[in-house]
Amino acid sequence: MLSVVYLVLTCALARPPDATLEALDGALGRLEDPAQVRSMVVTTRFEYAKLDGEDAHEDLVVTEVTRDENGVRTVRMIQHLRDGEPVEQAEKKRKDDDEGVSFDVALPIGDDLVRYRFGPTSVVDEVSVATFEPAERVRRKDLALGRIAWDPSTNQPLWLEFAPVKTPTFVQALDTRLELAGDEGSLHTHRILSRGVGGIPGMRRRFEMDLTIDQVGWVD
Image (cartoon, rainbow, N blue to C red; front, side):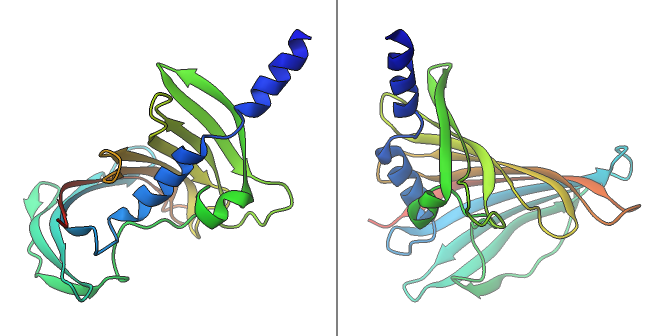
């Protein structure tokens, strides 16, 4: 009897709450919605070096991104440092779909949810965590393996960690952690941290990109 109860509980916990997945779906697209967001400050730190740590370099870019009612973005450079030295950049304008927070993999939300299956939920430091992987007999090219975490008291998603099943061309390894911030109605992507190895044989580099989004200007 106990083993049957355990099996039932395990199956029940094999998928995050619907409220968590719905909130995650809304949060990942919120910063791209001109009806909700007018501006933000994006800070990107990109580091790369040879596999042995030699020839290391770092770029630090801070921009203010604004969007008008017509959907046109203005990206104003606040700071650009390369290995600690200033780099001049001109202000530039782009259409809404030319730049933004996006992913090269389909995550387990929205219409892509059916392409995934979840593992049992565990609780670590009062945070619920579930693994996910592509469902059987589903095309795996743009899918990922990973974990999702949420607050069990509110069902609010907290972070995702994932790696693509198939890495991009010339990329040998790629792991990403996506962290969320805000409350219900303003939950949004706050940080994207990606680490990996890329390049052709003999010229491969380790890299790390740490992108944070702050000072979000919400539409009243």
